[in-house]
Image (cartoon, rainbow, N blue to C red; front, side):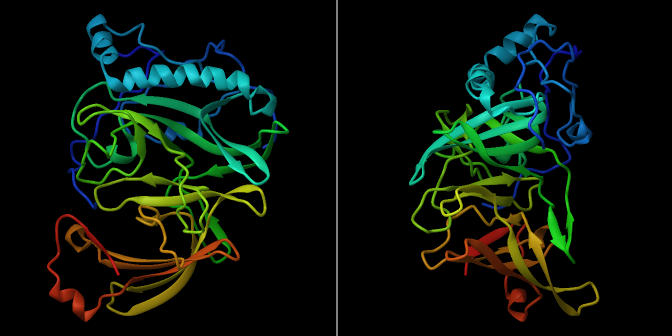
Length: 365
């Protein structure tokens, strides 16, 4: 297929990846679509070089006007295209509605979520710079990476701003980096800045995918995507307040990386929570070792809420995929609004009694 420059990024799941896995400164306000710069075209999900691309103004919304007519008909008939049309209309409304926030001129608002607090109404505004729109035009079955990307998603530098609805101003902004962000020896190591944010994804009420659907969705069927509701606020830390939501990355068929974002009522700010983690593991030399780190992403951590006592203990057996048995003992401290835990991947004698599975197995401890 020959693609012209003003086009959605059409992606395909790499055939070599088998399906499977476990269950700034303020700048000018957002400008209208008058830029002559067209978004770059990419055909592979894993080409992340565009994530560093920044332009002075927001890129125009892509369309299908230069594609063959038959291809246009195919795309126009999909659920993900109809969801995109609705989201594009909302994005244009949000650009006007939140112009008083004076986001960077190259920013696009991609999602909003309003909620009540004792301090008044607040809104979380999700926005990106260097934004790309990805759309899968087909009805092919989901493979592993689709379960957290869906058939339509945004990709770029992701930010969340907490907005006071009374004062119409930003309280604070957090920037999210992709899975792999961690800290050791007082040094923060950031992974690629590009983050995916789906707008069209299968609804777990109607679909059961082998790698495990996790995001909430509105509508959809057993064959067609629904509208993704990423900022579906829940009480994930069991403190009695629905102020949190998780972001997830299914980068392969082995594990689902997760991170936690939430509103702190006492401080009246939005937080990207860190995890203070102690590690125990067995090295290639067969000797056990221990160290500590500060993590932003932990495998499977936010799939289920914490228990009422602020604990969450579980394990995943990755030996069938060349890994080890990982045991997670996580804690939430309500008094300090902090998270910590122990992750133990040491080889234990009782592990030999469990037969490894090609599909990683998880269970509560």
